[in-house]
Length: 430
Image 1 (cartoon, rainbow, N blue to C red):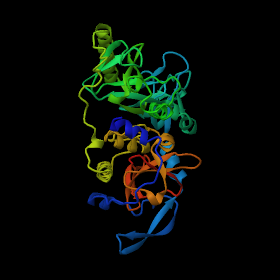
Image 2: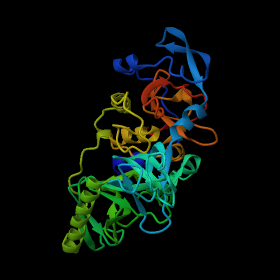
Image 3: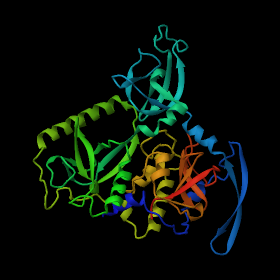
Image 4: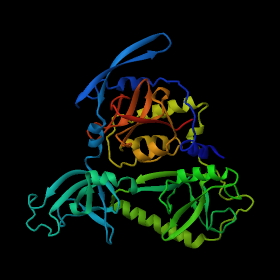
């Protein structure tokens, strides 16, 4: 089993105890610590004693904030576009009315943030739309504009449906990877995919494919899964066409749908045409690789293996995450330039070749193994919530976290007790 698969399994199934070692964070982190992080919210104080090294100790006062005060603000402006009939998208316009230009499309299941609500008559529209005169200004992906309110589910209703909007993708790690008709190295090769391309993973039961793969290994035994010793993932490699690729040579990512700009739509349509053409012209021409699989070509480097010890990896992950302090909170954001709480932890680990769930509840239920707060090490995930996980943060050591707090606060360093209701600590690294 390669290291990537080992990380997948470790992030789902392993049990044990963590090393009780705290790695100091870099000097930048020390300068970023916000001792009065909760001063803008109603909060209470608590004193904690902390041992420093082997000889000295200190007593610090931290602010304890009720989770609802931060978590509710995080999702207060959430919106999801849902359509029951075709076409399953709506236009995003430059202003609150159909006379304004189209700047993008919000597809079924697209997640966004509400910026403002506008009544057409108040906005000066002399002939407001008959079906709904309430336009909502949204930000979704790279698109900012106005959509009719009737297309959106918002607030608590949107949060309750957030998990089902997650999509899983296979990102190709090798220069060329065969797509096969069945989940076997001896099966017909339909086409090939190339490094850096991303394809939607087809899961009939909606299960996180990483959990599915790890569970199969435990049930069957690592050497009994398939005659060829490989795991396989089903992808949609062209319009209306599916096939299987080896899980050894992909990384599994997940994200929310977001609106697309007109330029993005055109680029995706062109890429889709190229993929369809490739699927039509290359089918059956690639090697079936019964003895030397064409799947096993040069693999892109895996950053998680570039460190001599797990402690070095932990330190690298923490220092990498701290580089983004000050970046904005973007609900459903898909890069570290701006994302939400679980997007931050997901994308930090992703950039080290480690795949974890995209949502807070997914990280709580399937990321790594549960440990106590006393066992926490830099690089572990702290889960917060009431009755379930609705907020996560990256532990950086010395009782501190780095987190995407909410739209008002952005990415910042706080005490691990920034919110009082810690429901789990997850170790995804060892």
